[in-house]
Image (cartoon, rainbow, N blue to C red; front, side, top):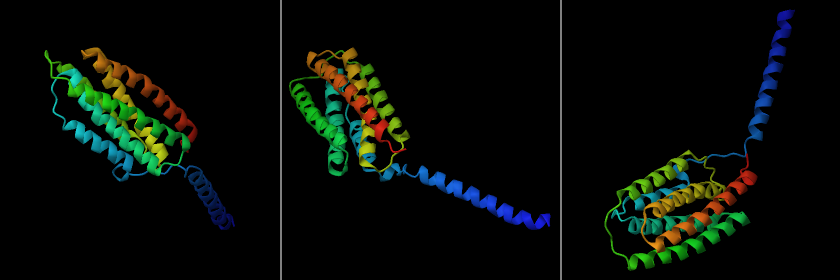
Amino acid sequence: MKKLFRLPLLALLLASVTLVSSCSKDDSDSLKVQAHDQNTMMTLMHDMMKKMDAMMKTQDPDQDYAMMMVMHHQGAITMAQEELKNGKDTQMRDLATRIIAAQQAEITQFNAFLAGHRVETPLVPAFNTRQMMAMDKMMRANDLRVITGNTDRDFAQLMQDHHQSAIETSQADLDLGRHTETKALARQIIDEQMMEIKEMQEWLLTNKGY
């Protein structure tokens, strides 16, 4: 008789485990992961990095900072345009609009500096070392992100890493650059992008979805 009751009891236990597992899966189902090579924001980041990698370095910190930041800012603008195209959150769309306006204005200032600047000596290879360290750190941070395919979340995550690399490169220009024009832009970028990182972090804490 004992053997007759064991099978129904075992079946009941297995059914219970299956039910619990199913409920747990449903509860966590709000986090959906997308492959990085299928994600538009990530593709835009990689395209920007390829352009910066191909940039010919002069070893003049102000020249290289200005040239690199034009490319870097254009990458941010392209990502912000993608947010405006496919994002749905009002706050993130507003942030994207602000990023486009600020960084287009800064590109104009960087280009004005480049138009009147000639490479100066002594050369400072240390600047490019720090610049590339910041960019490599950005791409490693990007590659570690959990990408969801949700435009608002992906924009908030990847733009943080993008901003952090701009902050670190701007600090390198403050430390090693020689011109007041680029140093003023560096300070401005650090101040505004630190505030935007804080805004994106707070938004993600509220809207991360898991």
